Length: 448
Image (cartoon, rainbow, N blue to C red; front, side, top):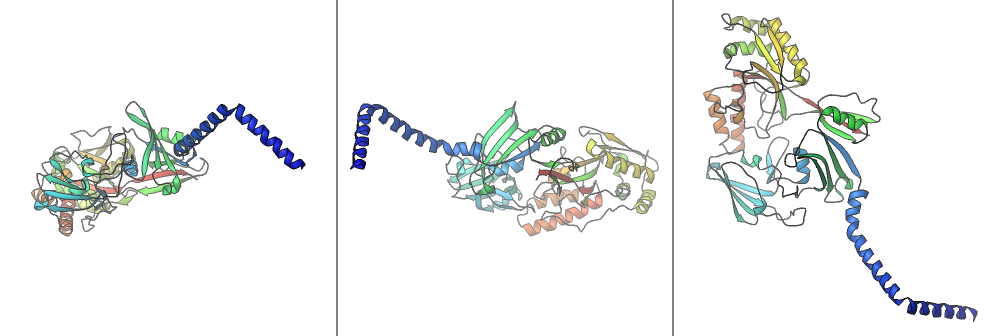
């Protein structure tokens, strides 16, 4: 009986309070309901900004939003094609493509399962490449026609450049959550995975540093936990629990380039003597201008391993008696030590040589020690064809080489192209307008 009375009193009190504070209770209920709805709407944003685990990565170099490193671009989006390690073009946004009209017309057929990071489907009209002398025609939402003035078999590899909409919006595995600029240069970029399961749900936070020294300082101060593409193998033993990783960059080749307008260097026998007179250099040896990882590479070329007696023998037969046999080896500061060892070896060989350090390549150099980027496709036309005055820095002229380069970029069959490039490499290395030395090392530092 006592229990019943207690519940009756409680009930009467609740009714009294409800009648007295009806307005407040209704408003409170509505406010709570709206707040709960709002919470679940902002929760994904809050969790991505403050609750998602983050990788802190430092990048050396100055970049605008339109010139970010390709490795970062490919995290946000990709192109009609993607490039494999051997330089082959495989399906990306395009599932397949066909080439007709002897390689002047390409038809690309697009995937139908991709959406931009704003949820809109990716269609042919979104493809916004701007390539000189190439016309793009929309056939339908998933078919794109491209027309070239002349046949160009490497064309699909050009279309591996990632596609973007305004604001760095892509359709790749990561989307841009935040970006900060200093002037027109990016100094901070945060990417979050579109799929929570990707990369264990971790976001990637990039901080950009103008120099390698400032990036190293940032690492020591704990601003970032990872640095990539460093040029020096730093001693990380005193930097806490850190690990140094070494990589061989097969997309660059450090080479000696001969300026063939220099009378002394027009003698092929002398160039061979200089090639054999290069001392042993640390690093994985390169033997041709096409990367060893490329499908178009061959190692069946003349080898210029260090051979001082052979260099002496060739120099004795070279036509240099009536000329001033002295050379200036131009290079950049990072190659100064290597350049000096080469110059000393050539001086010992009988050709007095000195090193000149520059910040930019002078047009009147004699010999240049520098690294050259290797394109993914084995097409070497820009570097060695006689018509390419801006990029053929050795001023090399050879009718047979010109013909091989012309034929290779018009040949659609990969096996036939491979044979042409094998012939090209053999002939070019024999002519020796350059000596291909080694693939440079790069280094990464990661906090454990």
